[in-house]
Length: 275
Image: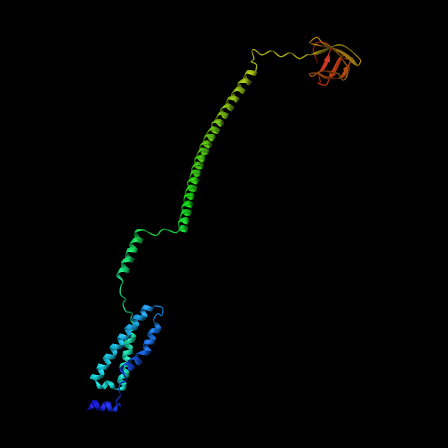
């Protein structure tokens, strides 16, 4: 009786046609689902359409069974609640991606192709191969240049070593020549001393020097005198005449006293002795 009373208070609501109810409750959500799906994938739309029909049929059958068993479900509030729950189930069902059947044959083919690719790598492009060849050529050229530079450095090092050796030999030769020059200088000084000693005459063997020439008056007159030297040479002299280096020039002639005065302060008189 309580169930019948609640139905009356709720103003018993007759369920609409099952097909109309289910379609109306699901139409909005199904439209949203179809809008979110990829319009370009035709196979997926066909699969989702078939799934939607299956779900609608199942919901319809369950709703009919529940309405038959529980008359309370014919209430308007209960129907709205059930419809909302069904809509949520449909949305969850379609939002959750369903696992696609695995194509074993395609997987095997892909595995085989991967194995083939691993075993035989794809050939490089012509541009890449050309760049690799250019890089290899440049590397070879660089190596040759480095080898040539290394060879030149070795040659320069050898040349420097030779120059240093030559310089050491030259310095040694200069030192030897300097020593020889010193020895020659000593020998030259010794020879000069010996020559100087040989050039000096010894006392015993020296030639006696000649005695200086002396003059005496042979005859005299006013302004003129005749003088005779010890060497037998006679001269006639007047004032200003030069007799020789020893006597010099005649300064005056004194005929009265018989004297001849010279610039060397030596006088010539009669006889063989000078005054």
